[in-house]
Image (tube, rainbow, N blue to C red; front, side, top):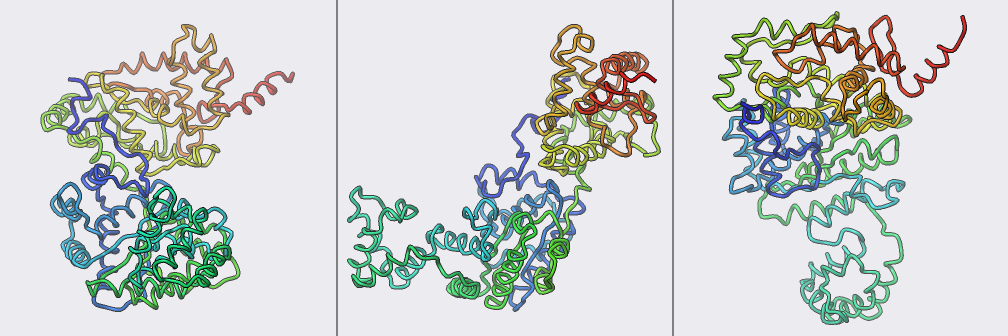
Length: 568
């Protein structure tokens, strides 16, 4: 049996490696809801969130803020989207969103289930956005930068233009005067190409005269007032947090459901704020006034790489205790259960495959675990049982934590690697790609740690990649001129563990990382690895240290060559 045939779902199906706020096609939403894994950590987060949220139903509250923190890749953006789907309880492929969780018993606490059902029994409307991508050019420097984006997305949500607040006010007044439809019809009639208002309005600057004539024709303004309005379009709009909160409250009060809630879900607010005191104060004002005017009917849920106290402590000279009080619900996400996510989303086996794998482990368990030996003070995970072997296969348990350490180390030590997530998103993508690379092998093959490099190379900077490229072209390292020689695989493996503090790249440990089958002859593999290490050392790609063998960057090779030329 081939490895690709053992999985319950195709290993080569499209799984979103990175969750993008704004990508809400039904097919993608359905997959996200079906495959979302509620780990032990997430059980608590869902409980904390919905417990806080239902406290605002039938009650006034000023604690209507949620701050979700976690490293890039910890799954906070995905969690934010899932909260949006659940609160809105949108119908996805003929099924309410919360039923994807309740039918599959993803939420184990009955108290949490009750809170979810109560939260979705009222009309919740979502405004989900990435603040950096929504912000207008140059708005980051404004003292009202946060308010600017909140105004924009709110106007867009209620059907008004987002790019200009004067025009949005014009539309709002037309709607209140019951003349909006007449204005749109008149605008299309007056336009020389018969464009609709909805298509033309983002380019309003090119249609000022048509706008003026339409306003006068429908009786919204006199000729003089229309001239004044068109002239006013050149001036800066006077943004007011209080005015914004009042407008939001007016919209809420117009809804039929007395418990209607409007929720702003803002991705990457911490990155947008940076070290700006002005932006933090602006966020504080927005959240305070929304709480005051809407009495907890308008919620603000944000994500940030840093916890709120870390963001505020970083900005000196200002007391931010008020905003910390508003964001009373704080959710700190980690990647502690990344193995659970990968196993359940990616590695679930068919029943017959699971039985066959468990039998294989029962027959060969001592040989299998004896292959995975490390020289280290750190205990590296082995297969604990036939069930764990079937769950994790074709991977080895130690690979989860070691790859996580590798991704963290690359992010901290390589310029391009700083954009690399060390949470379940990147881990999931790298594990999937690695399984695909051996999908046509017979069952008994294993994913060697060296294969993971091929999923990471796009994130590496020039000083690391140039070493790999030179090794491939080196006639001593690659005498047969093949595309991916064994010695280069050893070199790639040494790169991955170079910056991992608790891993010593000894001969024995490197051999363990290169094991690619439960039938591997360890003695023969050790001989091949030793030959590769010798040649790589001779060609100055690596050096032997007291802790084992170390990958040399381009700059380190130059230093090593200079040292070797010195006469002692």
